[in-house]
Image (cartoon, rainbow, N blue to C red; front, top):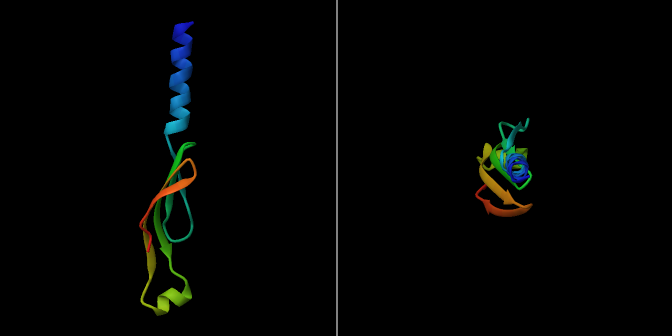
Length: 75
């Protein structure tokens, strides 16, 4: 019984903690999503208004835990 509990716990942790990468078609953004967290490495093409202001791409990292954004350095 104890061995089954350990196996079930390990499988549950694997599902909750290991991310799957998603490649977005917005210029190179990659999102790593797990059930508990999401990490986005942003490389997004800027809009026309931002290009006029010499901004070609948005770059940075966004980290969310339980759906709450805890870090964002995308300018």
